[in-house]
Length: 370
Ligand SMILES: [Zn+2]
Image 1: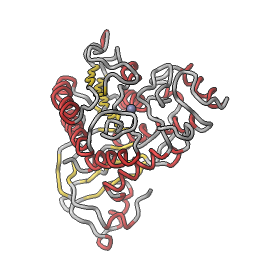
Image 2: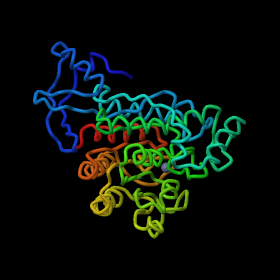
Image 3: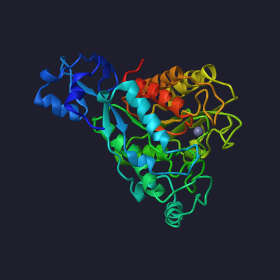
């Protein structure tokens, strides 16, 4: 998708935020004929200048059909169609013209190695080259394009980080696949190859010198890989709500980190059937006060939509409106502590209609918080 002159004709009224994250100005409707050449250039950059002269920066969208080329095989729930569903949901809810398309790049091996061992990276390369059906480290089915697509998924988040830190995007939604939060430093599992959220967090620290990163995870499953990577690291706070007890079996409340990382892991396991009260409640009453103490400089959302009511792999009961609210809570944390800097990446979500609807609610909140 790309910006076109017509994109300028229907920017709807929306609030925006200044660089320090505060809401600043309502954007008036901008019409094509009145658009100046300068405005057209700024539109292509994702920026608009309102009548007040304040710059409006859009939500970035990492979009590339390459994410459909990782194919775990017929009938697999982590299907290529998930990319289309999440993308369609976001665009239908928000309008193409209100998103900044960002092209993903391949992450380099050194960037993947911010979170994974060189040995494991070699295993993925070898297994894909040898046309195995499933990674030898665990339950992740692959095809001959999987290594390449996994590099693009991680690299897509890195491009999103770059665009946000350059002031070109306000925040970003990355409907990439394969997902990442089950991938540990030395092994993929649970449909995941590389841990996209974890790599983005480390990259924000290494490339931009940001000190503290929050990763908030509302997938129905516990992100064991993310927890494992940062378990002893006090600079990355991992917060997860997840159904218990289901796959992967980690994420009990007493798992709080260890060594210097003690206290920067916070797990909220919830029973099957839980929904708004338990999960939105946990974000509000546990995460928000924890972040007043932690004060993140950057925020990553592991946005799994398999916690929606009706998902084929989960048993929770979140609705699209609940994802709007979860997004708003995390955005307020980002605004208060991290100048609004926030990247959201797709994790699970297997009922395609539900995924589209919930990703749409999430993206709409990123563009225009309720
Ligand atoms: Zn999941």
